Image (tube, rainbow, N blue to C red; front, top):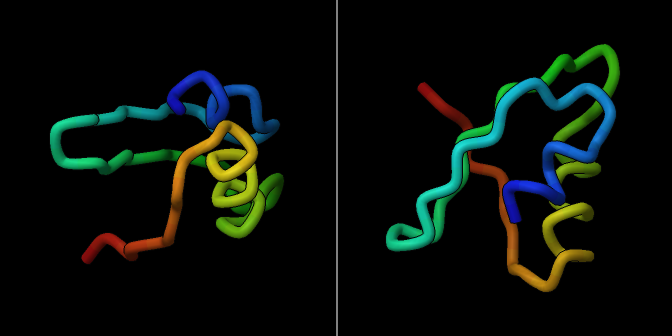
Length: 54
């Protein structure tokens, strides 16, 4: 999952915690939008949804 996100242009970091089934991704919003990240994760065979950070 981490590699799939890092391959998306505009993603700068991706930290995955498989025990919690969560990832924290830092990206450049002018280059990529969250739906593209969800699609990349789903294409890698995982379920994904966006949870906004406070």
